[in-house]
Image 1 (tube, rainbow, N blue to C red):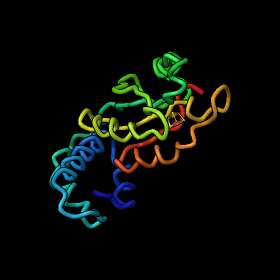
Image 2: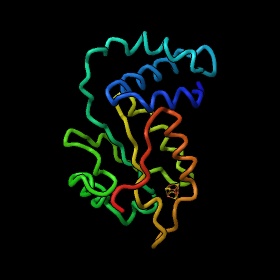
Image 3: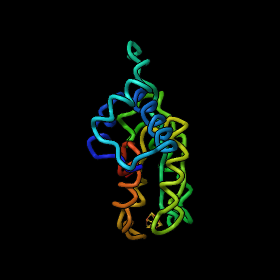
Image 4: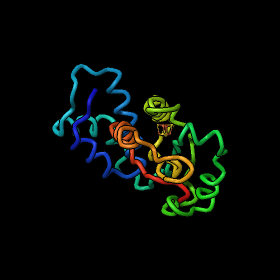
Length: 169
Ligand code: SF4
C-alpha cells in the first residue's frame, strides 16, 4: 500500500504514543489492503478505529529509536561513538529524555541499502518512532558519503517514521 503524502504529514504531527499506535494500524492496514492509496479522507477511519481509545491519555510514550549505519564503515567501527552520544544525550540525541530507548542497531546491508526498509518494517511492531542515519553515512573522510541516503531516507519516511540524519557528529 502506498500512503499519500498528506497522510504521512498528519501522522508526523501525532504525539509519540499515538504515532506508535497509528504505525501499528498502518501495518495492519497494509496486510489487509484492498486498494493502493489511502487519502486524507481515510485518516478519520484509522483514527476512530485504532487510536480513539487513547483520548484522555496525555502521557507520551518513550521514543523508540533505531540506528542505521554503513555496512562498509562497520568493518572498522563497532558503533561505540553512536552509543556514547545516545547514552549522554549529546549531538543528535540531545532532544531525547531518559525514557528514550534504542531498540534496533543495524547496518544497511551494503549498497544500495535494501536491508533498511525490511528491518525498519520489522521494528514497527516494537513501537519504533524514529530512525537515525548514522553520521558515518554522511561524513566525507576515510569513506565517501553514502550516495543512496536519499532513497534510504524516503523508504523509512514512507512508513510514517521520523528520520534524523546523524548520530555523533
Ligand atoms: S548504501 Fe550507503 S550506507 Fe550502505 S554501504 Fe552503501 S554507502 Fe554505506
